Length: 404
Image (cartoon, rainbow, N blue to C red):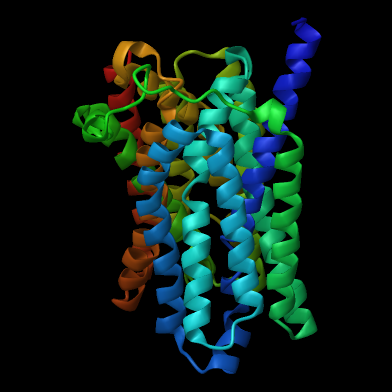
């Protein structure tokens, strides 16, 4: 295979996996913007609305660990196709919903579908993309997730403008079916070799033997901490920034938008850095320390109001830069924690467990910060975000020492 052919094949795999990842993120933010219409039509309140999202993240987080075993046993491409199919079924259930119970069914299907993406995506990228280009692959993977969020919010926004939430479900179904058809068309490129019985297959009793490795738990804790910080910032930045700096709701939302755009830009830079620098733990640590410093500056309330958006952008850039190096460090952990260092047949279960920390953080972060706000602790949200980021830095440095 020539170098040109390898580059083209790598680019196609990266694009296909990124497309699937974007599809999963569409379903992350498809439902919440529709709550105002759904609550009126089905007569439920904020508690029931929050419960729907809790169910999504609990099922997704729990399912990731088991999805990793399916990836190792049946192949990442097959499991990825099944996940996209579950997402399509979720969109169909949403479009056809006649009551709250059917919304719950849609959320369960979406959680099951979402649970397979990290173990399947990262298994495919690690097996199909040349190692020198993995930093760029992980950067695109993160960016595609942001794109999926934007598409999900756009679909919901259009449905709200039309006054019909069912249209968002139909559009999501069509998008998932298009993604599935593309993956089916690209089957020869994505087909991954599955371990044969007696030659790399994992015995049922040892499916989770890797959990005896302390660094695996450090990686899980890292994802929980950093995602809890992000979830708190994403959920409550508007009221917190408005309360501290007296800015309008529109300006506070613009600050959150700046954070998301900064994170996307940081991922681009982070992909280049990750491909050229081998000390990935230090890269993540420095990037997150920078993000924590910006969060601390915001928390003091001392900067002028006009600086809120630039500081939020700075937080996002730091978090974004850390992403690709973080994923490469997890790859090293997965390789080192599996027997003989030959991790390619068994990446799935390690990635599935480690990245389930994302869902746990997304579930716990808003609950913790919401309780803080209800208790009158608005001034504690931004320091809390900074503290979680510093704890994540200490965790990533400990991971780096153990995998050196």
